[in-house]
Image 1 (cartoon, one colour):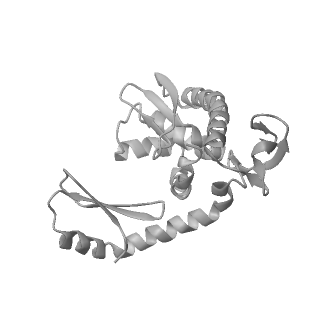
Image 2 (cartoon, one colour):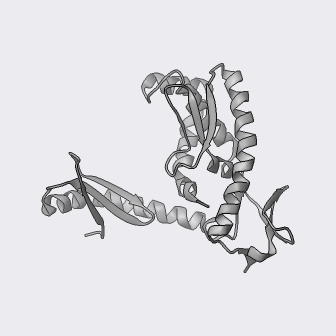
Length: 227
């Protein structure tokens, strides 16, 4: 039996979540433990695959997760120690205050995470807002408002009023992937669910969307960096 953490709640079904190498099960309040474990056994192959995929992603981004590399528009930046008191971006380089540099990488802690978050958010405010305006005008899908978010599970969202929120972590990803997320949310201003009509519109404006979706699934591990 795969080790797991069980949470009981007022719900009708059993659900399994695999995150950060751990398995969590949520079940209705009075569900017999034998039923829960039988459900786990039935989903054993699915859980194992999720754990393998997660491990592969952790290996692929081990340098980023450990602070030895940093991503900007999908590229790994060259780290350069500096006498500056704060982090700064240059051409393919991240200037790192000497205080926080060691062992060929950045010494990650809460202070550093906060500084990096501010840096990425400043870049996101400028780039994402401009790119939103450009794409919105190009595909003629207006929105009412734009803001940044630090959501832990979503790259973007759009509410019924046309308010689009984009995750500042998008700045870690290639520009083409960012464009897809923006198109996705703009289409939600006219199609408020993921119906076939929605995906037809997405395909109209971004034909290779399926390829990007597959890529985004592989980098979900990055969405909680520097929080």
